[in-house]
Length: 295
Image (cartoon, rainbow, N blue to C red; front, side, top):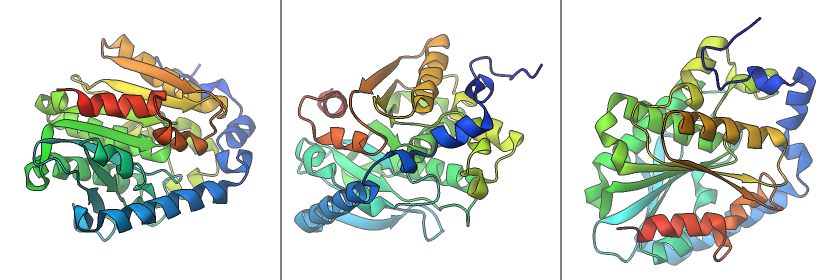
């Protein structure tokens, strides 16, 4: 019998290859996906127009063309909390430009919003993507004072594949520098924390995973000895595999004695879940505002 070296990792969730392929094909389960993306793009374009000199675009955090980030500043003079966001897109699509829309609210509330770009598959392997996420977070931490941010108050966020990269990038950083753990918190939306199921889906056509890469780049296998709090969000109308991913991850966190929380967002699918940033007093918006206001 095959046994994983990490007890909290059920082998591909115990599902058949056919079921995994179907359950992780979220684009086929969501009506009007182009409509969601069009709204995110239009709203993000409007934010850049409104912010003008308060946004700094295409700041390089590494030598590759895709290793760039967009920074949306607050009216606060200094020591502003920093919100970092990694976009989704199945590791091969989307971009930082269409994830600016939450800056409208959160910058007005006193935070800095940073949308991160990273090299996409298939031109770049998962190794480079994970390394890029770590590089971005290290750059943000080390350069926080240069854009009036507080390096001791950084909330790392991501959606879907972006939640995977946000997590593995942060864990890589903290496994090398455990003394920085108290400077960060982690918030994930519809995240992937165990890459093994991806090996049995169409995603592997461009990720080209193997067992070694899975163990190396699955956040659930890389939880640092000192880890920041984790708050995982999942849409109530998403395929069950995404709930399983977050359940496994928050469970692994709790097993190690680290603070973790899982929140379901009723009625939300894999893409409408991002609309929760706009819901006043909703769980996702409230979690981010609570982080901003915390002293």
